[in-house]
Image (cartoon, rainbow, N blue to C red; front, side, top):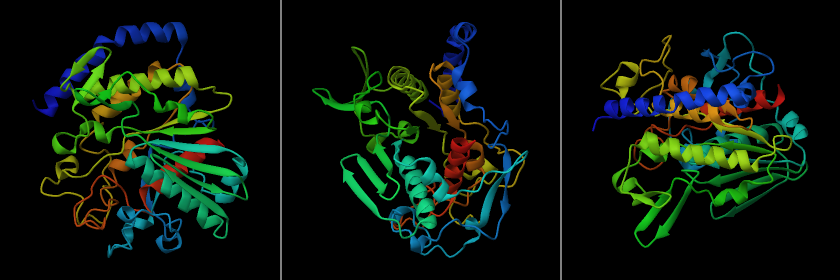
Length: 360
């Protein structure tokens, strides 16, 4: 079944719940939409990439936290122009990141990224951005199963990462490895945080040998497979239910990291013979030819129905333009990575947007 047909099928599925959404909106309002609106009234996510000679925000050689797969310059990437682009919103200025200010504002607090390797990408970026401001800061690090953390001891700021690619549970049953679309047991680890930044999408598309589960489960029903967009919707709806039940907005700020695009297929930017390999400049067109990802529609639908405030870091469009910013052949594995991002690089902008949302 072609993906276009699957997208159409999913669109019909979304339409089937539209009436209920409108009814709920009329009764309850839309707290998440209010939460996603910046206090400044500026849409930081509409803009363009501009050259800035002062970039990048840190040097790869001064940040030991960069994973080998993201360390493109160390892995021999010869060009550096991709490091020199700054995101410029159309109607305002994006606050320049200040690591000391960040640490002072969040002194004694816990900030956790929850999700897949794109969360890992963003978590490491934030560590490097802060480290550039306080290079002599005392830190302690912990790695325990899916949980990692680094603490800036002088400020008591703890940055944590919890790796869970689907957000919902994956367990071993008699039938095999099962992805439980309606269960989140790991969420107990997420409680007590001051900031939570969630992310999930890429692993929902994996099939064959790269798929880490054998079945999906919803209630008593076991599925060999289902339309992945519908499965993603069901999984995110379970996550939204967890947020509604477990988050106190007066104590915890919640973000959802928007869809991070891949650039394996050049047809997405009208260059069918290409991939991200060898790309050295962003896409500079007015609108990205591939358009909005159906996964972003899922995110927007779920966030429109959630009861607690959740801020969407809507990074999809600005990231679509950055076909030049992937590790490509410089991930150290000898393969081609058009999914993750070089550090320094694009995730630094994601963190600038997070910073802007936290200080606005």
